[in-house]
Image 1: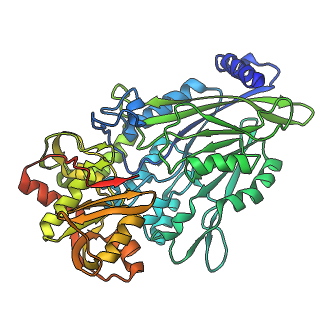
Image 2 (image 1 turned 90 degrees about the vertical axis):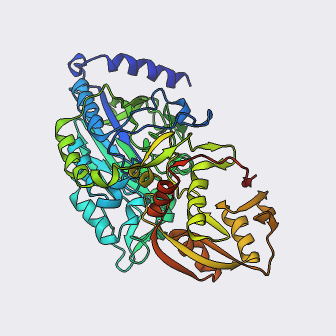
Image 3 (image 1 turned 180 degrees about the horizontal axis):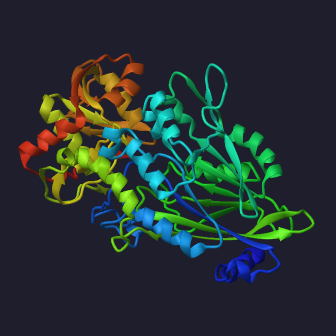
Length: 505
């Protein structure tokens, strides 16, 4: 611990010094500027005011009119200029698409084009990039001017890497190894299902990291595994110096340090983990301080300092990035800029109640006149702010292009779905406690095992959860987004429901 605080002090000194201030050439600084899970948020956005006080969003200094890729590009450019003569690497940890109309309409192309304009240099693939067919995933990789790395993706038939597993590059005096990993559940996404094999990331890392350490001064993992697995990986696979993380949308206001072993008296002997929440509302910055070990003839990581920098309205748009963005936005602005209705209050989570999910389910059930509706958790991507509701807002809520499916199901199978999948509901009230269903009613009456009920859900839920139960369904061809938009347009004004219909303990 004393050594760690000492390196913080040394880093504070060196951060204020120019490169020429070290005639010994034994100090070196590398800065990583990082994002993750931007999910198509190329335009500035705002969070609802009524977010839960214990949520990551509530801890943010700025929540209104934040983000925007053109502002992000300006911030990156400014920081690079300020950091000279020391270098900065710009890295994204995946899921840059699937979240807004830009992804619905352009399937990642707009995101990659804007990232190219920002000057990204390295990245990995997230699971949501594989919402595309495989040919489109590979097209995005080819369009990227930044190097995509991922070590646990293989072609199923040949065993060849889908993209380069890692890259070793010289950054000033520093030899830098970067490799990528993506979560195994990516296997179930459209683009990976048939031709791609997703290997166990822990097994891959155990084999690869020792090789990289022999070839580089610093080993950086660009991870789309989620914070929990990043922390576990840091403990179980010593030798990773930095993990730039994604997938879990974790807001690490300060880096996390996981100690693994002592490489030398100077080396930190652990892994620094960073993650910058979501949507590009903040830019992650991690400064790394290195000291040259003359005996070992290598630079050793001896200190670090990190922060999340808000991307606010006082940062001007980067002209070239804005031009790139405008080429895409002008093609869809007429469709997505129109107002469809008004929210009388914020549609946010309060305890177990998920008002934004409830609105979607209520809209679908009312439209199709069924007994109930089910929506899977994480399928509704944003909470909805009070005020005018645009088609763009609703597309951010339902960005996946799912359609509505109708089906009939026995009460027995329905109760099994409620217990195992714990979906959000309309027309149903239920309680799950210790993974056991203890209460379930439809329109106030207990669900009967042998009775047949009529329901709706989205096409993803139907394919993922109804099909394995042997429950047949009919795809209506009606896009979920349009069904909800038409419902709000007819209602004109919609209000959030907080009625305790779904309780999971």
